Image (cartoon, rainbow, N blue to C red; front, side, top):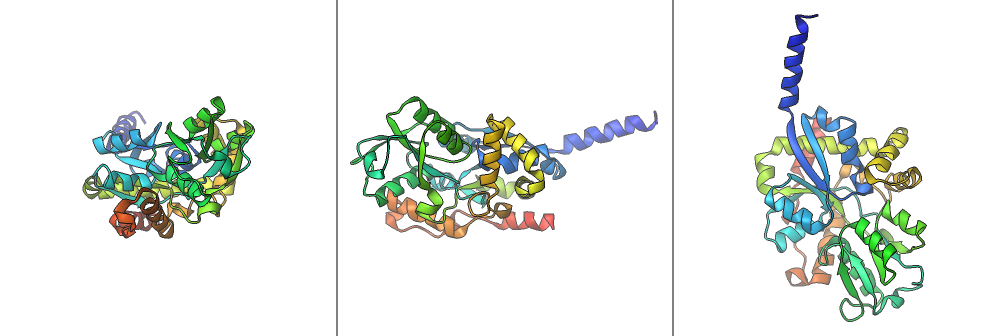
Length: 322
């Protein structure tokens, strides 16, 4: 055994050093569970990857960091990838889906109707992407226009929006998803409805990367997606409920009860995580249509989704798992 031990030590060190290092930046929330699980349960490690999960405070920080190469992979509402292409002129590509946002339109306890939001201040992350556009569209459907009827305040990610509403009753509404939507109710706030019910299909969280990096690191990206898919499968499996709840409680810093409620929502196939992290093309077309309508992008006529999406990496990753 003494003769074998040095060999085993060298072999193990060689395997560890052969792992590809990746940094992934995402928002803390229910949608982060597949990646967190893939780290903790060894899915990424089995793909030869050492993945570090970083949480972002807001989408501006995340988009700028990806463009600068501070990390390799971003996971957030994919409308942020569209914004990077159209506004920042960065060539990024969307390679997976994730969920339909799990958002709810949360308001202060004294708000009984959308009409009562006229003249009020509302909270968003960045004013021109993703969930801010969801909020604007819902209000437009109820006769309220940004600027003329209400003002938005870009404060940051979901945790910061909840914090803002709890600490300042003058902030009347925001889009929130689990676990923050659950904490919001506990704090006396209330929901005016789920985004999925109010707006229909919507492609929210997905994985996006710089296109040049994807081209130069195809094998690495495919292995990352394979680990992510396995993490997604593990996260929603009923037999993993207790372990998944523990990850949510520890990493999102919420109580076990809130974590358990969060897991119930994200494991609901009609509301939570998309099966295997699939991209919802119909939902993504609606994302583009929403940007065209609310922001006036592309002269009001949305482009085809293929301009921003390349699912060949995802398909190869699925093949790896088979």
